[in-house]
Image (cartoon, rainbow over all chains, first blue to last red; front, side):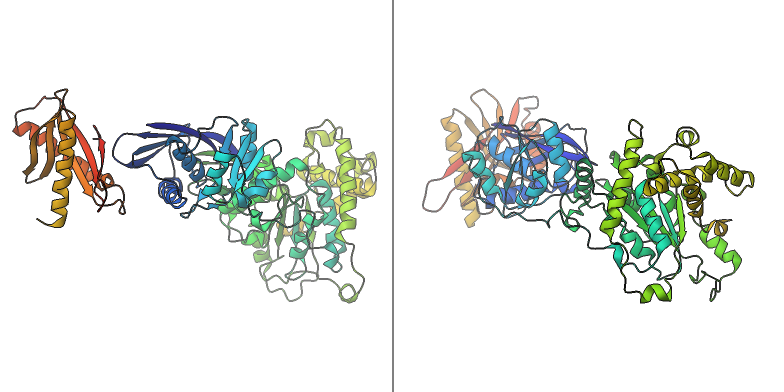
Length: 508
Length: 119
């Protein structure tokens, strides 16, 4: 009786698959069959589509309707299939012209009154549509700006099914309300100048930003560990264009886009609570596999306060993303890889009571409980952290001083400059940050000056430095050299880097 | 007879007339056993046994008449058809089950939506 075909995109993680939505209307008892491994939300599509079609003044077919989503083997999820199904249904009944050219991809969830609701993951879906050669994409008006970020594809935004059908009949696009996002140029409102004193920690922050080194802050409560960590995005260089698209795509899939400026160049900051589960950290969930905190922090900062309080498995689950820069989550419905390249910042109290600092006055913890406390952090995880600093309470003078510290903008300029120097040096290598130099290269091409190397070898001899520690010190020394304008790290750089390993005694 | 029964009988009459016009021969009406009822049984012009379920409504305000045929009802219709074939020693005959939706609005013309071999 009628056959029609439309296209849409189904996401598996960030990867989009082009889906053909075929509708066949045949003689038989009235009924609606949806084929092609739909999940619960998608199975409910039938009722939404039916109500939306009748409430938009179109007629519903009282025939046997079969909708097939192909490829049939791919499990599909979500509500963005409503619009392509509705359009294909109307085409199959002959109420809409059967459209083959231009190749159009439809995305959108229908509400019962026929209006279109925003859906998650529009940016990666439109990217995929463009990749598969679609000429245009029809999206809900609320997703217009997000879809518009993708170059090389025409975006038709509609606010309801009626506008969608009238566009397909007449080619005239109705007006719609653009839901504006804040200005992407606006930078983080957090500024480093808010932090009083803390010169050592501030320097450590800058070096970490230059080399992409993971950080560990140890200090009593209330000294500014969280304040410092929150301000790291403000001193990191703005994201590159490809990174912006990737970060926005992840946030689009995670459904956290509203909390961020669209196409913001500001590196994201994510601070999961220490009671978080490893699924929330890495990603997962039933149905569609959603990105976790590590992926939401991609190209930005992942801050874990009170790290020793975390369940051990949760912290150790960070090891894969720290190693490979991505996480692969496998579930029954398939396997998904999300990018997860982030700067890890851990914060911890020095002891369970939190008052062990300076001369340790007021601390009531036994030596043993202090040791046990920080030993909750596993060795392999700490191995990945290059910089470890004590954050002491600011002194009376620092608190009283009316002079503001350096602003984020000044620091960011220095960081950007130092990163450019490093990028020039690493031209042609497989990495571009000091923290990523492989150990073998650190001993050959990227070693420090002779006198500095002698210092490290002496420390090795005295067994105050392990082989692993040796490499870490050298990496940090490169970042220090970049920030100080040295072409090769000298003895002073290496000694400072050596000092960024504070609190070692607490771990042994 | 209640109002709905009268309406149903009218619908069946209309369908019977339609089928006779197509050259069908109506051989049984309202065949009833304890499991249920077959509205019409006919022999088509191509000599096929046809069992017909007729649904009659005055409007489609409560959905299309044929939407009233649920999976369970469809299953029962199939069982009834087989029972008819067995009881009439026509086992092995070619047969099909059709459905007809009759809409008889008050004050205007009726409408028949006839669908062949739907089950």
